[in-house]
Length: 111
Picture 1 (spheres, rainbow, N blue to C red):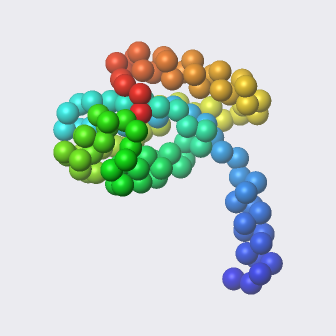
Picture 2 (spheres, rainbow, N blue to C red):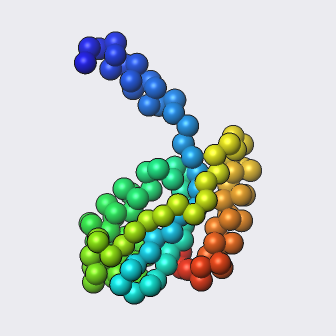
């Protein structure tokens, strides 16, 4: 890849819109569910899985489930996307409201 093509690819990557949303992490072995929010729903699994692999995730129960049952027993699913909201304060309010809704709906803990 030449320099101009590389610069163009980097610029396109930086311009891409991120999609905020609500997600759930489920443990098939125990049936536990954790619900969280992310400003970039496409990247959240990598961030969570990395901290779990390192053994330093801030949610102790989620870390215990990972340690006891392994990566194969956990799955991440997108519950809701908030795509077209450009105003940060509106997006943040929506995320907060929907996060509370899904935690109550699924009787879930925080991620």
